[in-house]
Amino acid sequence: MTNIGVDQVMTVTGPIDPSELGVTLMHEHLYIDLFKISGRYDAAGMIDDDDLIAEEVSLFKAEGGRSIVELTLPGIGRAPERLKAISERTGVQIVMGSGWYREPYYPAEDRIDRRTVDDIATELIDEIENGWRDTGIRPGVIGEIGIDKNWVSAQEERVLRACGRAQVATGLYLNTHAVRGGGLAQLAVLLEEGVDLSRVVIGHADSYPLLDYHLGILDAGATVAFDNIGDPRLHEGRVLRLLLDLLERGFREQIVLSHDVCYDHSLTAYGGKGYVYLQREFIPKLIEAGVGEDTVQVMTVDNPRRLITRRGRSTRIPR
Image 1 (cartoon, rainbow, N blue to C red):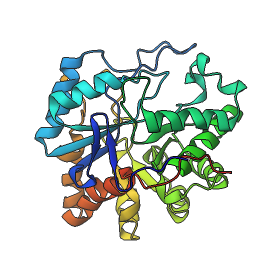
Image 2 (image 1 turned 45 degrees about the vertical axis):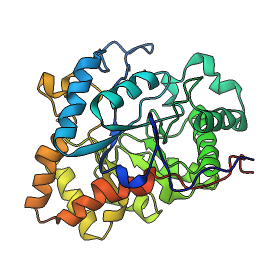
Image 3 (image 1 turned 90 degrees about the vertical axis):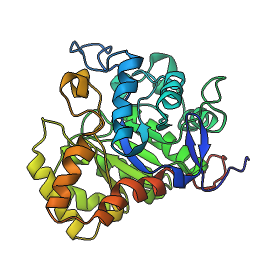
Image 4 (image 1 turned 30 degrees about the horizontal axis):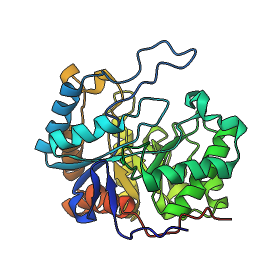
């Protein structure tokens, strides 16, 4: 059983004090390939251009941004060494994700369908404690752990349980992918594994802007991520009204914001929102609607800091 540090944030360049996080985007991608699975023929993913990505990240820094949570996982293009290089080049702190995405994207060599939950959890804990391969680059979040539809498949349940056990063992927070609902089903599995739901973020909650769904997640103690901010496929007016409703109900400590940039056309170089739409466009709309700057601070600085800060736990898999 290995003891770990308390109140620590792990970035791709090493541990930092939580106070250094500053304004943080909680769900982004700098390198990602989504089009390589069988049956998907659109060019989904990000351009493989370090210079361009560095420029886009630097724009975020110029707007006052300090940190980015990068949730790309193995199987869809995670690039730990390149993330470290981008962080060193731009001065923006990057927190790397870990785990397995959603069933169609599980790497065949990881044999998720043939392994026990404990075996999968042990592999994840090892990476969290010792780093990716021999680079020493360590993840600072478990996720984004996804479900492909709005229900949990058998293999996805296995991964969720393993990630839940790794979360309990290591103290990292856990971020899910739950497009168009499904977050409550994920929480049910994680709760069975003893996960403290205050350490869980349900991703893409704004893709399912129904009040009862959000209240179910929040009442369980988890955090909802409005992480598709600026996505033209969403009805932003409806998303904004829902966010304002939740704030009026007193849930500001359980909301985080981001863009989920994962396509070329989302970059500012291609006319998209980039990593700056939140600061340039959406936050001014919140303030115009009467949201105080203190509440903006809670959602963009305080909540990310609370979640990303690793809590001291034992690396023994819970039974």
